[in-house]
Image 1 (cartoon, helix red, strand yellow):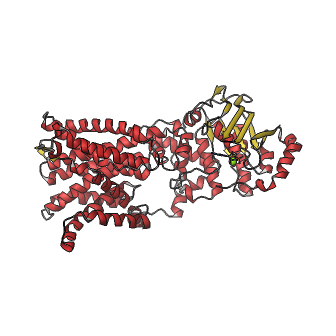
Image 2: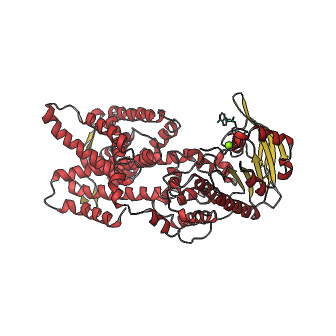
Image 3: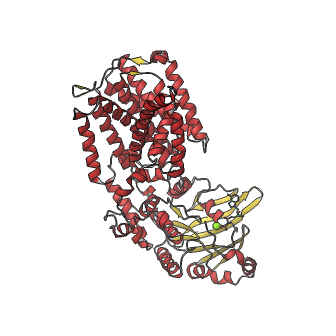
Length: 599
Ligand code: ADP
Ligand code: MG
């Protein structure tokens, strides 16, 4: 975002209520926009970024509003104390609901949010102490340093200070270590687990985060209205918040502001004009919104913010390339390396059945420190499945996998990553809209410990610098130093595979599993990759390599394991294996399969 525009925006916001010419009606309208923006910022993280659709945010607004309404009127507490009471209850309820609902997949998640959104709504209307459907009235205004915020013009400032704070915090969060993990939740959750990200925990964290923002909005609302009743916390408002997020652009905090403003202004206009045109007072705005939603999803699936902000973005292709790498920073801690020759990986009679298909048939082999082991075989031989068994992506049907003398076949993918197993995927799994640098920084997730709180408060700068420096170092090492700030999805497929190697290296692995890393590379690029792998081996790295290019494999590997139809055909030094009649047979019989598979 352009800094000057930002300063101008804040200045206008600050001056507006001071101008006597500003109608009271505007102030009220802008206050409502601020309240909605708070809720929608949460939805940007939850739905836009992480892909978790919630129709239930209005209920969390209600929890914040009712908490402050009840405790300030019935118990006489200060509104500032009840803000935190509200946050506590909202956090607790969101945590419980999240733990239950977020396990649901696909369409069941939005349906789940509708269910508890409705339940909370009816709860508000049925609790005696909350005044049932009449609600609670006589809530006193908030005071700041002795100044009463009874008037809309005073309340305005508190609302917008909190909105700007929420935007700042959320913006920080998304650009931090936890933010990269959150951005991986939509479309890259399995990959993220392979780099140690606890995706289930992050889902709950952002669910609570979004609910708390809604709760703050409810707190402000209660003291602005000085009364609460259940209706503004019902399902139709939950839908409206989601609508705002979609209209504005669900992946940006500015989109939240844009969406809330547009929807509330349009709604107001429709409510003014439709009754005059149609001679009715029915809620026709819902129909207009429905049509608008379809049009936007059709023509601007990313919402309106990317379109509105396009003229202000200045990064051309040249600018991306010319930008300097992130500044030097202290190196991240490294794990101790095993001694050369020590057995790092021991696959023992590993078996995987998919229904009646035996994809991996009691396979066994070892990888030692400082060794490149090639795993070859025709397409469908079970190589990628073997990778998934080693890395915990798939459970074994039978057998055992040991890593550094520890059994790992019972561990989760992220716990195996924690022990020092890094991998690439046959079908590239990068986050295409994230920069190359950030994609690689995600690989180093486990080497830092920046919390969500530190990320939102920008207290993570030194550690973030370390992560970015490490990511840049790994990218330079594999020859992609010119593409640090490029969107990963813009690179050629071969280069994307190399980014995956850099990401795996950023995890500081002891064992590196590469699934067809040279597929799609040109001759020169293959040679460069070969050099990098040799150097890694010289540094003591153990590598398990699946590759179809036999020249590449023969040149690099110390040891070969050949698979066919899930079964181990042969194993030994490359030259010996190459001359093995069974291997020749499998390969001659399967020449068609020798083309590299593509995603
Ligand atoms: P390779 O990597 O050697 O080409 P794979 O490990 O991808 O082979 O696949 C081995 C066999 O297992 C193939 O027949 C494939 O169709 C099957 N397979 C792989 N993954 C699954 C899965 N998730 N469900 C069912 N079958 C699978
Ligand atoms: Mg494969």
